[in-house]
Amino acid sequence: MIRPPYLLALAVVIPVFMPAQVTAQPAPAPPPLVDIPGQGSEIFRWLFHLAKIEPLTVAEAQDRIRVGSFQDVIVVVLGFHRTGVLPDHLQWVGRAPEAGGAALVAADKQVDFTATFHSAPGDIAKITGGSVLGMGKDRDWFFMGQPRSPFVESRRPPLGATGPEWELFKGLNRIATSQPSALKVSSRLVEFRSVLAQLPKTCQTTDSGTPFGSRPLDPNEVFAAGGSGLLPRNPSRLGFRFLALSDPNVFLNGMLVPPDTQEPTDNLEFANRVVKFLSEEEVGGKRKRTHCLFIHNGQQVTRFDDLQSFLRPSPPPIPLPNLDWNKLQEKLIDYGNDLIDRVQENDGLNRAALGHDPDVQDQRLRAFLKGLLIVLSGWAVWFIVSKVWSARRVQNHPPPPPAGRTAPVTENIPRNGVFDRRERELLRRNNLFEPVQAVIRDMFAAAGAVPEYWDRDGPSMPPIGISEVVGRPGTLRQALADLWKIGYGRPVVVTVQKWKMLEPLFMRAQQAFVDGKWWFKSVGPKPDPTSGGESGA
Image (cartoon, rainbow, N blue to C red; front, top):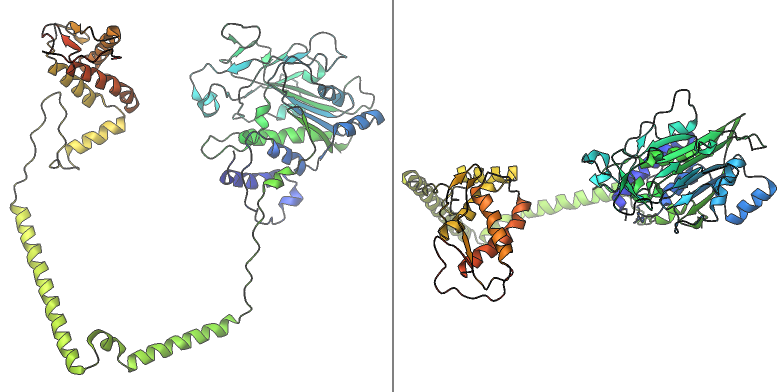
């Protein structure tokens, strides 16, 4: 879900995309926002609403086709529920360009456009339906470092290529995807003649052609393709605009305005460019498409302003009484001055503290001053004695720990001394190798470890004997070998996270030694080992 603090940014960004005459006027403060589903397309549809584009139903679109009035219609198809089957509403994607309209189709399921543009011979283009995964090690290639969310890479137009479609991805390098597929362009049909963007070359795809594992992307498998201009088969001689993407998730609410805990994206700017690309047209004079058939996951959408349903209305103002605040302020000041005068005239403070009788007031004042003097004298004596005692006291510090052992934690160790600084340095570097090495060596020393000989990797571990009660002796032997490498091998980095995984292994190995389940053969087993039954050590 998109939380209200993140959508406040949307309230600031959306007016940027509005016409100049609207942004020039002072806008009222936006009302508070409630949760908006991250998987919806309300924000994307709101951009159509700001562009003054009206929604159409399928029945209204059919009527416009019947009377030949489809040149001002935009067809938007986002996502499909089924794979391998051409949905019925894809017919509108092919009819719109032929009539001088515009179309956008974005899907990550398997879709073949050959039947959509049936007037062209042979294969045209298809969305493979496979999942594209990033295989590179550079986290900057992926949104939030996730291999399933690679960023889109825009392509430069070929020499001499022109068209408004080349402005869609220009300068945007953080268009985030979510489990995209690949668009394979087989024929440079006019609608697909411009390959606009691709996925990183290190990505691989899994589809029906790769039953085992994955394969690199084919050079013809891209992310986006489109076109614009005049179609020879259009009798009205009106230009068309078309765009196909292999991921509909780029237009979801959670991708257009991600939470503050996530990285920023260019998806909102890209969505605004798409709306302008589909609606604006300049061929033989300015014109604008004003109606849209919007289909999301197989369902037609008949409202573009439903983002308003997520706005919480502001509470009505609290009614205030009609008071003359200037006169009320004067009355309050006069009342306060009169109250202070009466307290001073009646000697209210002295009477409240010392009583009403003058003789009693003198006695109480003397007693109060005498007690105050005694308290101050006692505090001065205590302060002087404590200073003298601290100056003469011998500062005893614990002896330094033996080599290879960690210093015991006692109350006498100064927290701002060398030990505390060493502890902070270990945590700052995220390397607990020294204390971990010490505790592991303590365990092996208690078992009587005497290294047989030294080599380039350190002393070799003596032969180990394992009791018959151990259910998996091979696992225990491997665990001891891994701990020996850390205790006596080459220094390695032991992070806090790695020690959290090693600590249970160390504790089980230590307990197994205490129970007499393993020993060094040069020392022999402990006398009278306690049998623990079947063990998972």
